[in-house]
Image 1 (spheres, rainbow, N blue to C red):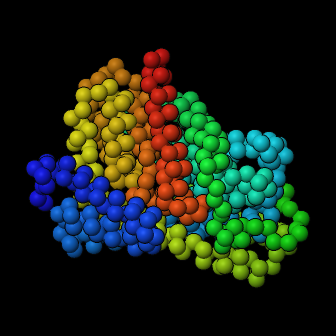
Image 2 (image 1 turned 90 degrees about the vertical axis):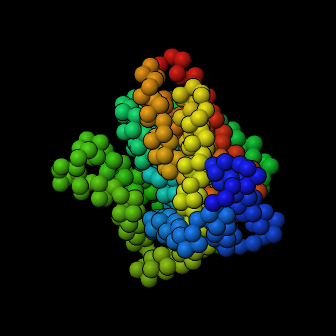
Length: 453
């Protein structure tokens, strides 16, 4: 690839990345182009401008989309079925009613943050969002509160544990790379994660909820609304049904922690049922009984529910796949490596350095896991030359950097945009700002904690 204006190869890559992202934002936000088509065009543009072979660009786009949707499409499909069963049975209404009664309508957004934090510990962000979105819609409707005031706290709780709290893959990768202590990392992650989620969740959510008024997508709101005057299921069985995938995933993670080499057949069994796809499948089948047959629905009713709920997710799945295609081109074109090289040349505090490297790669690639994995490889040798540093805090700093500034190259960005029925601009002002607040507040707390441990 030839350079422009005498810039270095790395700087030229960053210029073309900026041009591609600007194209993406302008054509979706201003000219109202279809996001899926625009994402594919932006991915092709970046690949060609960065000097990739045209056929390699196509392979990168196809691979990125397939790699992203390979698991997420199944998760969205199963999660939507579980959400539909919660809605049709009145389960989402029951949880919403109980939370409002216990916390009061004015404080229910605080409980949402804790729900997101707890549910998010063993599950991926996407899984947690799919599980909890019916509750968000129902609580917002019952309390007449802004959808974002209810939703942002849940998103903050889910997101902070995704980046900071083991056994999520990203922090586990850094723990292994830095030889950090798992128990201490979990302890510090809770000390840092909860206050960060409070600031970015209930506090920021109340602020932005007053300024951005959105309604749930009509098709999803209709799908997750209670039909007719039905007797609501018990709170206990409803909570168990929604937490069943969480319990199964947690069991799988615990088994691997106790037996990392998976030498026992029990470990293999729990690892199998703890995989998010299997855990969700088991939970959906269980919900057919607990929220279906046990509530008086017939097999024809359940078949209809599980089929009709999938139609509204088609657009969401394609857009997420387009985001994955764009992300893969960013990686394959060398943008992630260019970011890492520029960051490595900076002479800063090791905690700040870890955060900065992960943050730059996150902004470039859109993936928290890619940012954490790549940053761990860059930071580990530098960390080895600084023996006095608390390695657990470096793990957390890397995790905090990996969730900063989610934007148009992040599949999560498009997922939130579509589920909350926002424009690109509204998603940048709410979701992107929330992610950045999470990251920066966490970094500040990590630096403060480093003065004492």
